[in-house]
Structures are given as C-alpha cells and as structure tokens.
Image 1 (tube, rainbow, N blue to C red):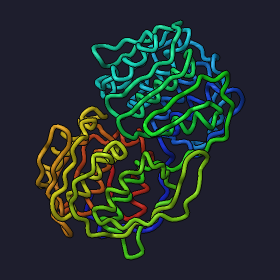
Image 2 (cartoon, one colour):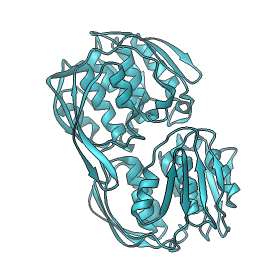
Image 3 (cartoon, helix red, strand yellow):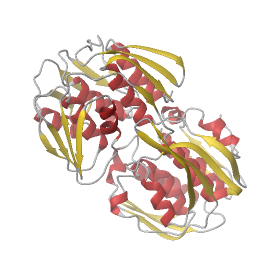
Amino acid sequence: MHPAQQVSGTATVPGDKSISHRSLMLAGIAEGLSEISGFLASDDCHATLRAMRALGVTIDQSSPTQVTVHGAGLRGLKPGGHALDMGNAGTAMRLFTGLLAAQNFDSQLIGDESLMKRPMERVALPLRQMGAAVTTAQGTPPVNIRGGQSLRGIEYRMPVASAQVKSAILLAGLYAEGISTVIAPALSRDHTERMLRSFGVRVDTEDLTVRLYPPQVLQAQQLQVPGDFSSAAFLIVAGLLAASNAGLLIQNVGMNATRSGLLEILRSMGGNIEVQNRRSAGAEPVADLLVSKSSLHGIVVPPALVPLAIDEFPVLFVAAAAASGESLVSGAEELRVKESDRIAAMSEGFSALGVAHTVLPDGMRIVGRGDGVAFFGGRVDSRGDHRIAMSFVVASLRAAGSITIRDVTNVATSFPDFGPLVRSIGIDLNET
C-alpha cells in the first residue's frame, strides 16, 4: 500500500453490524414476517444468520442486504443440534448467551481462535443471578447453557458500561418473571432498547437506568439498517487527513448519539465534519457527512466519551499521530479484550512506523507530528483484528513510504468490500 496524495468523491458504508445482529435475533422470535433492508452481509452477521437458522428460524436472503425473517415466536426456537459457531463475532456470542439462557433446551457457543480467548463471565454472571445455568471455560468460551431454567428479573448495576452485557440481560429479560433493570455507570449503545420498542416491548429509560417489562409477544417489523458509524470512522479520519478541496462525502451514516462520540472527539481536535440531511432509518437517526481536510491538534479525550467511541479508538490513534502536539486516551481498558489487545497492537504498529507514544494500562499517550508526514513506511501486523488493519490503511495517507499490513483476512468480519471502496476514493491499496 503506497501513500496517496488525497481522497475525494462520495462513499456509502455497509450496514451497521450491531443493528444487523439484533435485527435477526428479534425478528426471529417475533410473530410474523419481518423485512430487513440494509443488512450487513459480513462474516460476523452471517454467523448470527446461520445460528438463527440452526435454531429453527426460516430466513430468506433475496440479496446480500435484503433479508426476510419468518418469526418463530417468543417460545418457538428449537435446539440447534450442534455447537453454534459465532466465528469472530463477540457481539453475537454475548447476545446469544442472553437469548438462549431462557430456552428449554441446552446450547453451546463456540468461535474462532480469537473469540475463544475473549472474556464471557461479564455476561454469564448477571445471567446466573437471573437463574440461568451458564458456564464458561475459566471465563472464556465455550459457553455452555443448560436449558429449562426459570428466570427472574433482577436489578443489575454494571461495573463497566457495556452494551453487550446490557443487551444480554434484556434479551433474557424477555422471558423472565418480573421487571429486568440494568443500571450503567455511563452511557453505552442503546440499539437493543430502540429495537425492542419497535417490536412492541415496553422498555423504559431514565438517565442511565433501563427497565424491561416482559412481553407476551413481539410483533414483526419492517427494519432499515443504517450505515455503520464504526465503518464510516475510517473514511472520516481519511477525509480529515487527506480530503481534496471538495471534501469527502459519506452517505447514510448511522448517527445514534450512543455510537458517534468519535465525531465530538475529532471536532475538538479541529476536525471539519459537516452533518447534512439528517433523517430517520426506522428507529435510528442517520445523516450524510461531508469531511474536509483539517489541521488536527492533540487533546485529552474526555472520559465520558470513551464508551461512546471505544470501537473507533484504533483509527482515532491514527488521527492523533497525525495531529500536532500530544493526545491522551485513558479509561479505555476495554481495548485490551477486543478481537486483539488493541492497545498493544497499535503500539507495535506505531513503533514500526516511527510514532512517538507511551503505552498506558488503559490507553495511550501519542505525540503527533502535525501536518505532513506522520508515519514512516514499514511493516505492521494487524494480529488478525479488522479494525487494526483498516486503521493502518488510513495511516498510509500520511506515510513517507508504503505500509505493508499482515493478517488482514478478518476485515471481512465487519466491512466487506473495504478494499474496492477505499480504492474508489483514492487510497492506493494493493491486496495480495
């Protein structure tokens, strides 16, 4: 991959991964026929699709992004007959743990080598408090779930803000006796609450407290999946680093306030990002983003924005390396237990590319070079992590020489056709 002078044009990112997972699960336990448009046809979401089919849900896919789900009803799921393979999808594994905890049959969840190392007790613990029989292998998959348990609603205070933990409790709460309450220490993604309401479930939200009242039935819906903000993040930073005079237009981006904290961070760094054509896609807000090349400066990232931008931190680190002055990210220990240890992976890459930085237990201190060259050329290892790989593709825009990125197969887990899209806006990417 060779340095590009600038990026330009119009781009549309694929559908939101988090919403695609949830749409299949909730449509699968609803009554009637649900239509999903804008579905993300990625490896992660196909893992959820295969699992729902294995659980007895009929799903038709007329095109990669158009899916029809014949709901089996709240009590209509059937035994999978084998371990359900989640591939690389941590979201799928944690949400399925909640959904399957209340079924009358046993289940086992497994994944690829990376996923089998990721922590699952954060989900298993509150589910056991609800009465579920969930076990892990010393905290990691496989996740074994014994069916036939009677669940009860609980009040659970999350030690760390986590949409996946919250969502697992709410999915189990659909089957529990009594109200299920989740209290968070900070904001986290609210896609599950929004989508549950659209299916007719009573979900009350007050500040950082969410209460779910178990329903009798979920009603089928017409669902629109907006463009994935986490995917758009790579293009946003690319535009800030190297957009032409006309800017880079990114269309149909999901603008959920619990997901788009990166916008506020980048704007506070001096980023010129114009939000245009605000509108709704079902229960979610969307907009188009016009990104202009900007002279960025370092900042201390506010702690309140950390959970609202956690998935975007690898590419934020790239932006910080291209900014003038020092940037500090802390309170992001969650990055240690993603598809890779993202702090360690980005540090290793930065060292290879000549970026001055200091690793912290929960983040990183980065000394940016400002306008001009921010990275040497060199070789980096993505550690099989899609977001690490794509972040270093963006880094090539401000590199002195070509960057070679190893182990990039997992880009397809979240962003199919990433290569053709970034080439269409001007990045010189050669895939071998």
